[in-house]
Image (cartoon, rainbow, N blue to C red; front, side, top):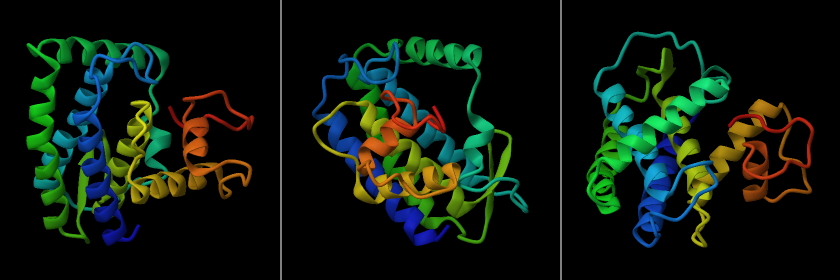
Length: 206
């Protein structure tokens, strides 16, 4: 993964996500079952916090996954997924108002982007039990932010750089390029199980 592509995609993804949640009713439902916008925002906030920790504590290589194979290792089972969803809801609800989560996000997301630009492009980080090269790690963050941006059901689209990187990731999981009948947002939504799939190979990740 090219470091500049990954950095640019992450910065754009977080910028557009911030712009979207600023104009979104954070109590509105999302594509994530059981989550309102504030819950989804808290989940992505946890990613930004995870980025700060990982980038501040580099490790020795070699990596054991890249920006594509990482997703094969982190797809949770139904029980784990339900437990995480419930933990996120309880954590987000601990704030007095949804705007409290937004304020923490607005502080954390730019810091994560600055850390991404300061990180050694030849370095490695550990996260969720795996070691990744820094560019691959940043690509996973940008991909997740793009997918969750679509989950908000906003009329404002995700950053194109991040959406294209998500498409590249899905191409890697699929083993072939995006089916020509699908535009990029539809491809991401179908391949991640957000909408009913037109391809029996979907979903590739959830």
